[in-house]
Image (tube, rainbow over all chains, first blue to last red; front, side):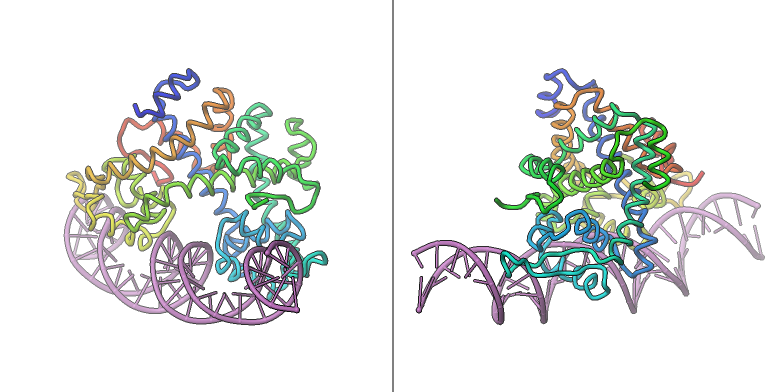
Length: 178
Length: 178
DNA sequence: ATAATATGTCAATAATATTGACTTAATTTT
DNA sequence: AAAATTAAGTCAATATTATTGACATATTAT
């Protein structure tokens, strides 16, 4: 039993076979995410897009007028990596940008109608999958699911994610600097 | 409200703002998996390995004497993709293979002592993260978490995952054909 | 003897990502 | 007013991960 397991077991909250529980969690997470992310691939490929495009479209859709820096912070990728995908989405009319009136260095990103439609189709499929799991499991399971996922997020990012969920429809500080 | 949302809402199990709930679930899953998978990168880079190497080492470690075909089914990648990684792991002494006495076409894969040690280091960090989230949340939340993750997995794969978890320490049928 | 299976290999290709340097424009600081 | 900092764009090289499709050998099943 490793030190962390001993520490956790001593806390009296986890069943025996702690390591086995951890490994099953790791695997459930892997299998769920594998199937969850794989689902949208067919739609994406009709546009010659990939999962990176999906993530960009999704988070721009969720955060109208998001800045480039903020998007980089959410996705945790580099500028060049984003530029490749963002450039294609702008060129093909899914994303639009404008300068921030308050600070003209900044670009504010948004989805076009075409992008909104793509986002809707992609998210609809994934939402259906989640909704199906939620429906079967019930409210208590949902609370637990959310709580544990939140607990898996890097500790320093949790408050940002909390704020992200309670933002008033504008770009909030998620994983970004003050 | 889409048809599925209406259907789910009609079932009376989900709160109002169903679409918002789905999107928050999507985002929690994204943030959790992003941070969960990112954690091992530092260790991996000291071996010039990546996440694909990690997954291969992990699932071979969990399934001693797994066949190539079975590993492909679990990971849902192509032979060439696995060959690139598997070849490196074999060449550098983390993985070993032997022929199956019962069917000499088959290769049985296993971790060497070196591979076991790498797996232990990688899994220890991820287990600690999961254990921390579990400890805070408690047993009911854990049950819910597992149930919903299971519900997110492709329906046709769930029974395989269930069997995977109850296998008697040997290679079981996970996402593989009968 | 033939067909099917397990696996390996090859080549081409595509998607996604990092690093690091350099640039322009705008804002902030001194 | 000048200098420093910031936001973003661009470029090139490189690395990682993946798919497709064809062909091969060895082994097992029919």
